[in-house]
Amino acid sequence: MIEMKWIYEIILIVYGFSLIGYFIDFIHNNRKANRIAFWLLTMVWLIQTIFFIYEVFVENNFPVATLVDSLLFYSWVLITFSLIINRLFPVRFIVFFMNVFGFFILLMYVSASAAKRFPDEAIHFVHEILIMHITVAIISYGFFTIGFLFSIMYLVQYRLLKKKKGLKWLWRLGDLGALDSYSFKTISIGVPLLLIAIIMGVVWAYVSTTTFYWLDMKTIGSIVVLFVYIVYLVLRINGHEGKFLSTYNTAAFLILLINFFLFSSLSNFHF
Image 1 (cartoon, rainbow, N blue to C red):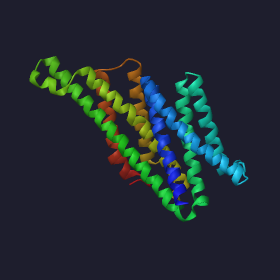
Image 2 (cartoon, rainbow, N blue to C red):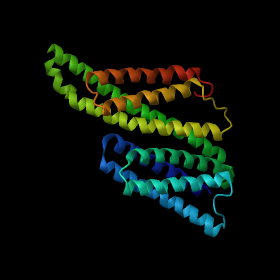
Image 3 (cartoon, rainbow, N blue to C red):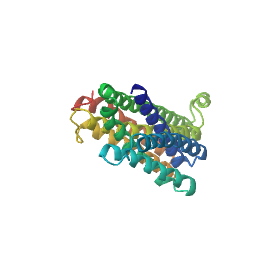
Image 4 (cartoon, one colour):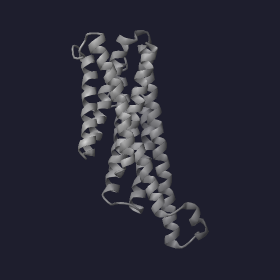
């Protein structure tokens, strides 16, 4: 059963990378990212299909008898439809959001079935979801930090060019267009990571014995941070860039710091 637990964890990791790929394709119209995401999701679908066939032909159980079993079938259906739509129709918006919801359903199934499939490891598995939630969230913060630094470099570079001072430092700071592009790319990775972390946090809170508060300061703060960076991406896609967007990104990072340091201390169940 321990081996089965590792398979579940690998599925979630591969699915998470697939989500990031689909998001990058959605934001940047990157066909290479789309292909990688498609094949990663195909791996998840194949493993789930094996589970499905095992349940039907070995266990003689069509997985719809219980709510937990239905989650597996529901997730498999969503992934199947997603793969078909991705190959036949150029509708990237729906593909990404189908997979966000599919990831949530699969994570709920894995968490809910842990007690049944490996009861001795169930508590440890739920704890691992918490560790993954914190780890992915901090990694997303790392990408946001890099994006913030690029924005600061942009603003400094812009000021130096405006005043025609410090010209010998200009080549070290980099081209304005490149700095703006790098900031955009790092935030494009940070946003799906934070979304995955929030999904993991919600699932962990519901399957653990911890009392979950939607109105908890850290919960609200994390959702606000996600929303603020989504607004950044929307602005960037709609043609805003340069000084305005770098200033916005700097303000967004300050909100992130408030959430990380202040709201954590005010939370009912976060550290």
